Amino acid sequence: MVRATLNRPPENPAGEPLALIVLRDCSMRYSVTVAEGREFDEWQRFAATHAPQNGMLDAGWYRVLDDAFSVKPFFLICRDPEGRIAGLASLYLSRSPFTGRHLASLDEGWCACDEEAGTAMLQEAIALRNSLGARYLLLRGAGDIANRAERVVSYVHRVVDTAQSLEAILGELRRKSRVRYIRRASDNGFTVEQDRDVARIDTFYHLYAEHMRDLGTPVMSIAYMRALKQHFGATGLRLFFVCRKGREIGGMLCLASLGCWLDMYAVIRTGLLPQYPNYLLYWKVIEAAARAGVSKFDLGRSQSDSHAHQFKSKWPGRDREVLHGYFAEDVRVIPQRLERIRKQDSLLQRGWKRMPVVVANFLGPKLRSQLPFG
Image (cartoon, rainbow, N blue to C red; front, side, top):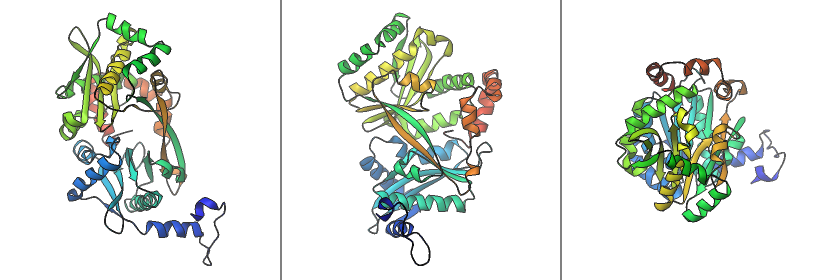
């Protein structure tokens, strides 16, 4: 393509860069529309075929967003001239006062068969942003598309290869001197069990809500966890608990797709961390994924060099970079407030940590109703 081979694209007689004309002509082969209810079965088949390890493209997310949050879903479908699906984009409109009105994708809620389809979806997403009066478009994990954005932020996912044998994974853990922490947790009386029916989702939510309060971060509503159970169920979710003396003191909720489990939320009561139950939890989930024939266990998104990333780096695997691209006509509207709050022990965080859990659980869902994924 001209854009990829010329540093300065030649211009046509009207003065418009030829590369932009080429991209527009390519993308005109595709049509992009907002998905309707009757199209979600087809959406699901495409996602299962073209992105089998990406549970964030599951059509169930449309219903979760609609049921549990105050955002407006706009799931885009890209089709070729024959009407075949060539791409998907899971977007939603947020009116959060913290970040301003914006259009965002789910984490890695993007799949395009080729560059032309990706360009067509990007153009439609920007047009939708403008028609909705959104200040910016945020695409999380849209591949190379993010490099066209006015601002790009890098995140990492730690991915464990669970297709290898458990002996190989344990061997790597021994080299990292982590097996002793797993053994100490067992010696300290901790056990891990799987809730195969996801029956105790409310129990997990209360543990998670307390943990978020301790971090100084507003929590999502319990309706969110219940919507996950309703629309994904035991087929699409894996729920584990760390217990001692029959009492749940932590757990992990994973999104399960073909070939990959994604660690969405993990929590341990803060005061018990020195006894290493978090190491036992992660090992048992990795072990369960490997025994289930899953090829990858994704420990989830974190900022590079953060405390969460440092802990995840202790597990055998590799870091996979995921880019978040902010598209805005005026770069001054791109929000940095939430990033500053996350990076610093802000006054808001310190105040939130001191708040009674019942108050935090009441206020948090109101603040997060427009921010499903931060």
